[in-house]
Image (cartoon, rainbow, N blue to C red; front, top):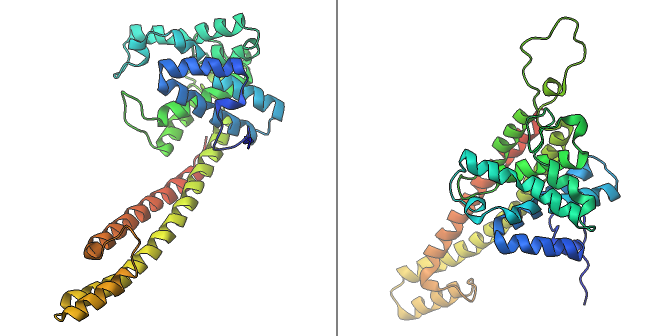
Length: 314
């Protein structure tokens, strides 16, 4: 039976939705660096959802998402000792890493199938205020697809666990991106100047896109809460079952007559799963209780995270 895949799925955007040529390029990425492949797919998924919240039409959404899939194509030619370095890059190494934008652009321009998506590779590290690379262009010269990919790329890079840094929480990551969306401080404005330059009118990223990022991350947190609530209900049912088994286990332990011991053992066993053992009922029950406590604590953290996201302002 042939499976059908939804290109716009919020949870399962994969490279099988793309043309053979692009899928081949992603396979090359995967063969050199598994992190880059996962990163590219995650950025594409976030990009697609941002397009949805930005209410962009389907054609542009498909185009923008495809650009996101191949935005790091140029990393194929970044030396592995730099691309996979377990510690932070030196200034010299970072200069080499930055060339993945122009390398990817040239690769796309040389291939007719990739040429329409070249803008994403070249511009996804440019900042609206001119502080990005490789060319330091400003808002008026940065294609909108690259502006969207920049936000998705930055968020995924901050929240993902990398070799050289620890995981950063979602709210902290969003606050870092909020900082990037703020315009540069204006220390002085010449007398009579009415139109501010891009350097002071914009931050590095577009505020509207960042607001949509709030919505996508809130969706994810609320989905995780709903999923965990279902599992918590399951754990509570299992604990109730095991507590009943525990009553017969205790009666078995405090009985002296062999017939009584065997009677209560069989009764306790009637409440167990095939892989569970009567003699391990106390241990099994405690494990379920510990699991429930941990998950209830985590779901409370998720509720706190959701409240914090709802109050974010950019």
